[in-house]
Length: 364
Image (tube, rainbow, N blue to C red; front, side, top):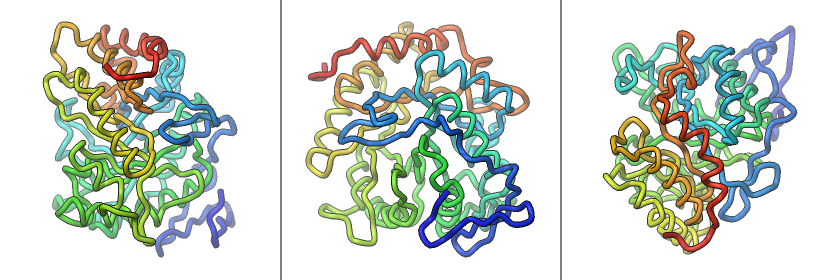
């Protein structure tokens, strides 16, 4: 683990991390380095790479990862890897959902960030590192998605923008170079959850400053948003080059518009993102949150998800997430694999083969 100008020092059985002016002490036994076999995630033009080789990434929503038991993590990650899937998307500050469809407005008292201060809780930071370590051992990449709106105090107040930014910076400094398989979403659904300013352009400008602040060699950083706002969000909120104090995002991470024929729209969405990248700077297109599995009621829903992923790859996307609520609650011994419906399981079992047999070329 390295940070320019700083060295992490282990003294008397404690690991001390200096981040954003706040000292956070962690027992070294709770902060293992990532497994030596972790896949190294990278970017090569419009593609993601794994260990230097281009690969179309297939991820699965696994939001409640930090509350999953060790046994659940091991079993779920092993199963995902056996299906040829590449990774998971997790939320260190996820809601403590009362039910699968009752998440928003239910903040937990065990989020990574402390309410008010935004400081990473030592035990939750340790747990995040343990989750990343298990993923690394199973050769899975991890999308670590942050969210400000899910961290609230007893009165319901959300973190201040400054406290939120400090929390992200402290977390990433703690992870250092020990997580080569991680990419970072600075704010989930920026179009719905502003961080610094009420307007899209000004919020994007300040997020770009945060992206510059947390930049490190090999670290992939972005924020997710809608199709309509991605040009502002990804390119510093300005029509021209980013200012020196800011940094453009590394990825075009788009969330589905949730229209009735979302799967048929997939190629057009990818084409629009590829055209944007051609004009402003080549980047991978990541369909981070398409239609949730549970919201698709069509009789052929399994085929719709398989078709969407395959057409995304053919159109030139770099990654696609199977978005499901089946891992919105993983506490109390629950698991992803234990909550999958039969047809949902069948989709995940056949997804890699379906995508790999699609030729890359003009989208249809």
